Amino acid sequence: MSRNQLPRFFISLFRKLPGLSMWLAASCIALAGMARAEEAPRPASGDAVLQATRMVLGIISYARWPVPPESYRVCAAGDLSHLRELLEKPASVRERPVVAKVLEGGIAQSASVCNVLYLGETSASRRKQLLGEATGRQILTIVEADDACASGGMFCLGLQADGVILQTNLDAISRSGIQINPQVLKLTRRKAVSP
Image (cartoon, rainbow, N blue to C red):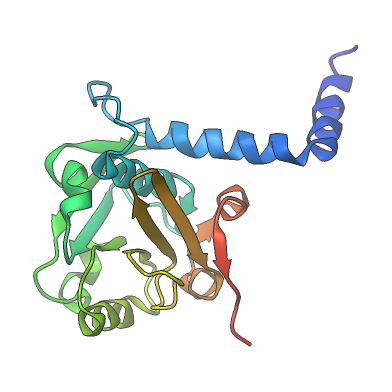
């Protein structure tokens, strides 16, 4: 097989075996999430803290802002027990630092310093307020414990003992101005775009 035929071979292989494409995409997300500090411990199978942190880092790694940020600034609100790892230890994505801070007020006060909003479990009114303030801004929104991904967040995490369920809200993603790699979207449950 010549060097020019190899790419065609792999393309035809992925078309014939769509499950292989899904497995490869899932592996890429997992590896991106593991691209953290080398001393990070390997997670136990039920460790929701590490799973949530790795999922957040994986989502960030597959997002593209129109103007790439120098660092990824995660503003977090609500119950942040699952994000403890990211709040306490330095991390990086694509050789850019990820800095997480607890959001005391609203997004309006912190819009210039946040490009990711993570909402742990919080009241419906607080969630609605913060997501409303993020609307129209290029802020990647990740919401925990939103079963149908109906609150307006772009990504919703369902943290369970046996893993993390990732859901997307395509309507919120399309309005954000942030591009998300389509391979990530193939791995999620989706809320359909509203007419």
